Image (cartoon, rainbow, N blue to C red):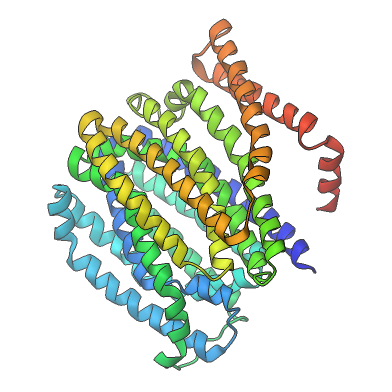
Length: 478
């Protein structure tokens, strides 16, 4: 099977996994929003920040380096495996013992037990991580998709049951630990033919991977602070209740790009990495990825922007109205954000993760002052606008880096993106007309607004972008 066929087949399975996982996870949030107060989501958001931050140190960029270097040496892989385990246990101890620091920073005593419970994540995840990386390297996306589906479905059901039984914020933490435990077990089970652990460790064997991962780790740390500075400052300055509103608004507004884009990038990276020495092919691949991401994300975000006033109460229930304005601002930021994502695949494929580090440093320098001053002036709304402004500046710098890596692409990008933008504007106008002349309350009107928006965008796409005959041919090729 060719790499193209593997990519298409992998894309189908990753898409299936993402759709099913998203339905269950989104349903979980909708149910829990009716059971838990905003403070519970704020507490879990802070806990997730801590876990995600320390996760970067245990990984050290090995996932990208193994794929980039097409590593197959079993001794090297065993050394990486044991190094990962060692770091994971060390970080478990650090997170568990330093939970009082989180309490002091966020001024929230309830964080003590939640952070300690969440630290169990590090005792689980790294036993199976290298198997997951190797399956991705070998384009075994069907296996990875099935593992994700089973884990998320069972974990989501357990989370909701725990919430109904009064576990509060802990229901989300325990649910995530159960999901990760199931994933780790199945990664080992189904990836054992790719790698059998040898009782072998030599630090010298992992030096090349560590060197590759230095910028990756540095970029990860700066990128983490850059991308989560809004949550950190809201939690410390404005309290966990406002962070809860902001967190759920963020989950809804960035939902399209966090669920759709990984499908494209996860499948694309191993393929693009194999053509790292062919500049013309990489440029063509980047433009195609950017074009596809635009068509997937822009209409969804535009639709969410115009329907937020009816969608938010329908999904989250009463009491979450403060998130409506936040959702609309964040959709603007998300449009800019989705266009920056293909650079990650491009930079790693070209062996230049250092460029991502410099980009994140620049964005961090701009973003933190914006968040601080606008947050002081306009609370969570100000932070959301700071996010949008900083993301736009990041996009400009992002495209400058792409220009350096692959040459002139901007004219073709503008030509490609003009259509989804115009189609989305027509879609928004159609929904506004429906709201004004027909109605804007209740699930029926929400469903009709979404249906009208989808019909308008798909209709224009089939008429002016992708002829229906091409859609049929693509479907037949699957």
